[in-house]
Image 1 (spheres, rainbow, N blue to C red):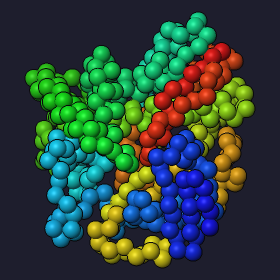
Image 2 (cartoon, helix red, strand yellow):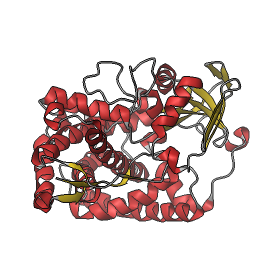
Image 3 (cartoon, rainbow, N blue to C red):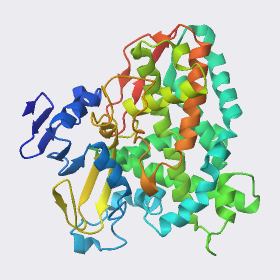
Length: 414
């Protein structure tokens, strides 16, 4: 049995007590994940009241297993499952989530994803390389002569939100407002959210939806060469997206299109600076850069947990699930499975082992993965090349949230 101030593992019963609000945990979750991998890779988390999987093979298989899904109310009623009624004070948030790509199953998921996917395939995304480089260079120009910077606000926050806004067709000057809405909105996904955070998320969902509807009206009157126009005007098997579907899709793309990438830029820079590797060794060419980026994604994924519902009775690793049970996978812990990765807590940019699961797998594999990877592959080498001698000026401040993992501040000097 392992015991610490925030973690106790009873391997015999596979019961785990883990306080996700303890700074010792959320500031360095990898240490706790390593302990779980060693003693209890499949466990019942007492505080969360459900089963969690951290083993790479189990997580990889569960993400693809069609006996599990992201929604359950398409095959059963709340009454049948004993689920509580929806909360009236988050009605706007629930409406925005109703048609979210993240929360749907086929055939609705297939229809929505088919319409959006065209914009996110690798060959379309690769065309954005010069644009991302120009943007990154412009941002670095602003602080290069200062000798110091808080990287998140000056760089990491701006690149992903600017790029996803351009792709969708939302004016770039809306960037700061999109960030505010997104930050309030995603607090709904956190463990231990408060009523105040729920109210703020609901208000953000309403304002966000009203704004997207106004842009939809503009595009209907005057189509442009952007993703929103494409979603409005393209049909799939004779069907067009409804306004509610358009709103949900635009919101999920804007949130997912930058929230995780902002965290990952900060996480990656931190990991690289703490690794002791020289930047010119890590970013020698496209191939070494890509390997470096994948290793930072493996070691410090921005999104840690992905939940699914059991759509039918099933058994995984000796645990029986009934239809309507929720099962959770810790993607970031699966990336540290010692059965797949040698010396898993160590940054090894030349690894040639299993692919990381930071973007998920199966039909819900992150649609924005090619864009996130490109932003990292372009922005990181530029940052280190333009700012030789880059170093941590202060200890990085980790956000006090779980299950996202990112920094509040990253103060650098050169």
